[in-house]
Length: 71
Image 1 (cartoon, rainbow, N blue to C red):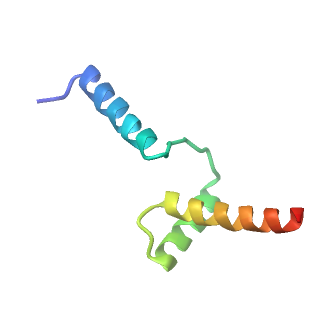
Image 2 (image 1 turned 60 degrees about the vertical axis):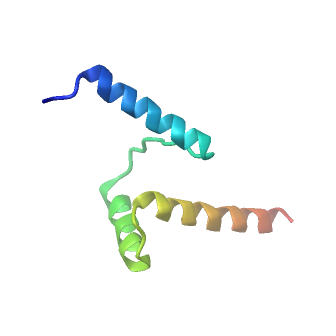
């Protein structure tokens, strides 16, 4: 039995609410294939579960470098 469009939307909204409750959010990014390949390579090399974890690490590195440059 196929779920109705409303049921799918309700599940998606509930998932997003759970993310927000955890202090997290989702976003959609349009990236070149070579950037995705780079993220996938880092993901495999570091044994991470998903690209989001790779992005979190890269953002933290960028944040650290930026903060060091500002001091």
